[in-house]
Length: 114
Length: 113
Image (cartoon, rainbow over all chains, first blue to last red):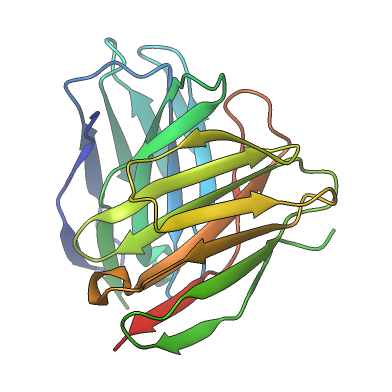
């Protein structure tokens, strides 16, 4: 079983602070995605990274895929209350059926106080 | 474009009963996958259907089953419910090729008493 460990599990910060969330595994993934889930809703895709060392930016969010494709990080600059939610990473590898199945981390619950 | 629709939104059942959950994917999407989300275990993959065929299955007991219809709508069934089956059940749809953006529904919150 491929496991994805996310840290920290919980994060409570003030508006304007910076933060980094980590997603680590002992396994190599062909690609990795980050999702954000708000209460009462399903996860929404933020980004997909596929190349080792890749860095992608989405406004104040910066995503990095580790060189060995075993880990990833999400950095938020100047957090805002609207960033509040559960952040999930999902690693992908091709399954026996031919499709790509995600293995999700347990998530980082972020609360940004105004 | 309408999103992924899951029904019902909430369900309360008792141990030993069975339950059927429904998922209508985004029009044109041929892949539907199901996930169980709990605070302790996080989001876990149940199974995936593509063009009415189960393409992959997660590590869940046989009490969990599903099917997909010709219009890509999918149902998931859990028989002989146990207290530990209480969870948010999410379905996601995608076109079904490679690593794609999964579009999730809002889920069905199942409580087993």
